[in-house]
Image 1 (cartoon, helix red, strand yellow):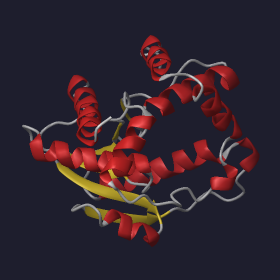
Image 2: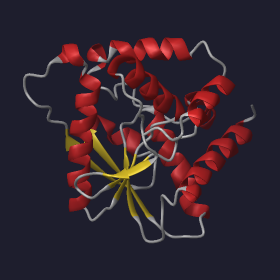
Image 3: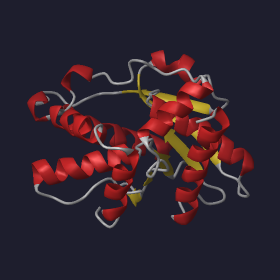
Image 4: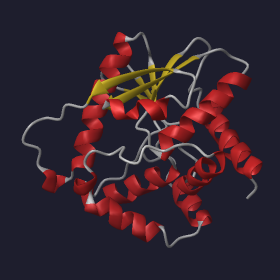
Length: 224
């Protein structure tokens, strides 16, 4: 696919998700949960494009839970950025998988800081592959039928939004490569303790073509 084609495709799909679900409104003070990985990097680039061309005005900032090594990555973008340390609970049971725990801790810190900064919505870079992987993980290992929602309001009253909900991971990778964006290679501090089960699900899904992923995504669009 040509460079401009992949840019237009990802931007179009993201805009469609935002418009159809009313995710962004005029005057919103939005914060992107910025890990520095490809998903949050591309999400930032896409939202800057939409901010420039949208018929409504909204504010956009970056917020990172981690360390100051992320600063050069954030400086790719002309946005205000905020950095806070990641303080994990003690005595973590890594055998049960650190990813769900880390995600909950990060979202909790993010939500509190965003409220302090006068924000009301956090945008995350989860994509279609994340959605269907989570769906299968919950079905295979938890006997439950739910997955990542496009948006929801958490217990602190902050809206959590996933504009890439219908964008394939391969499309994000192609966008990042063609745009020449700089990716933070160590965005996960617990790389050695990631969930084995999710890795196995990713291997299974990697054998299926994109249409099969779309079929799984849309056939389960009512499961949250």
